[in-house]
Length: 227
Image (cartoon, rainbow, N blue to C red; front, side, top):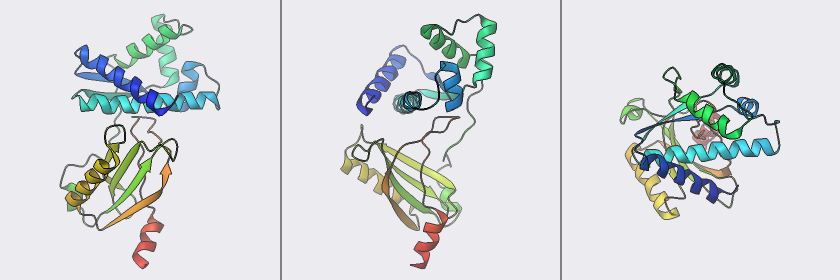
């Protein structure tokens, strides 16, 4: 499935949630092995492609819901726990529609715990208080000729992420994206900015589905200081 279709599906889902009056949405998140077991897919090949498509669609959905002021909670789903629960509740997981219903019911149970991941959520001003910081600019996309996200990450020399901004290509043109990045750098004033020259394929956290951002390596940082 191409990126445009993934984005269109995510927008349609977000619009549906908003039109139905949802102010908080819980979304399932899977590790690849759990996803294969739950959906009875053999690992590799087409299964990996389908899994990545779902991850990307969920990530865009999270972004679009957040833009609409909807609170999003990612709920990690483990295969053994879901399958045991589904059997106890009498769900027939051989039916794709029943499986989708069961997953939705599972993550919306009161006892289902949302992900505790916190990716780069330092309060404003905290990063500066920690001393000298660096920044890394990276473009993400499934294909080099089709950029999807421009990422600017504030981090420490050891690679610890302090804060980040992701600008979506489907919402902002190249010039506007650069302007947002420049404004971000003007606010945080890092000691040095690294520009990653590789268009990187996006990868997502298996616990909360956040985009896994990229930062300059400690060796790159050290080499830059010696230059």
